[in-house]
Image (tube, rainbow, N blue to C red):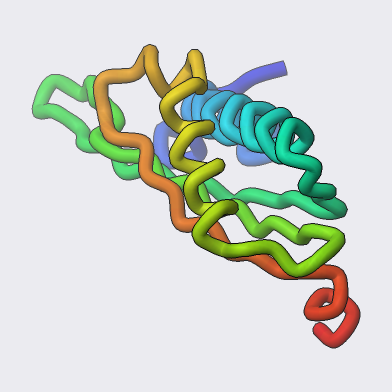
Amino acid sequence: MLSADPAFRGDNTRYNPEELLLASLASCHMLWFLHLCSDKGIIVTAYTDHPTGIMEETQTGSGRFVEVTLRPHVTVQNQQDQQQLSELHKKSRELCFIANSVNFPVKHEPVFHNNTQAAKN
């Protein structure tokens, strides 16, 4: 089922709560982004994210996240205005229930591709 992080003698073949928090933030953001793209008629053909978080540990052994960065790679069917796509990411951040529930910044560094670029890579 679950385990502690390997740094705390956990099993690295199992998810830990910190990974699940990152996955929750990334998933919530992705779902809002896809919804907003759909509303605008933008067809997303691929979406991956590799979120990272920075944590600090206290002298008592407890800790907390101080920042999370989402790094979505988004492929769209047709060439889109990257400024519009960036704005949709910003709006997704504003709407995400999970991001609005945490007490640390959730940043995003999106990378955009269109199917023509993806075919070349």
